[in-house]
Length: 140
Image 1 (cartoon, rainbow, N blue to C red):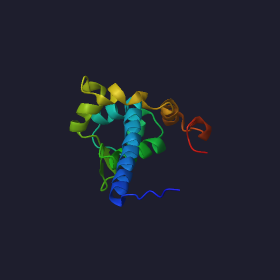
Image 2: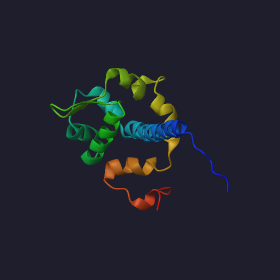
Image 3: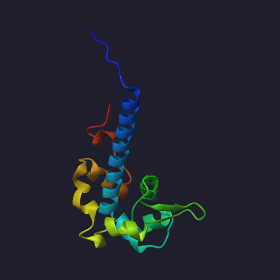
Image 4: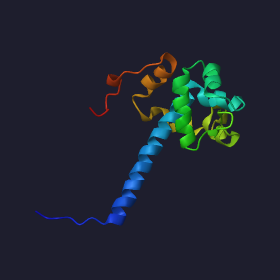
């Protein structure tokens, strides 16, 4: 049996790259959900607002909106003000992410078709639930 010596620097660099790909893939899905639910378009119109205010304005479930907001804050898409617990979509970001941004709207051009489970997630934002069995490719 042959033993393969791994270059630890290359190994760690590739691990970081893979983690970045995974994180960016999840962020792309969140952007697609924001486009399909109207969250991005509505946030572009609203002043800084709480998750409850954004949920009410879009007629979506606050818990899901709050989780979505957290993902987009972490990804640097949406800004969060901890003093008043409000979220804002900077106009410079809205210029690339909303329906009004066409033809620059990258979200509409390539993000929505990325994953087969997105329809179920979008429905969960409206109804409040998605069952584990609806994730056909999730690990068992």
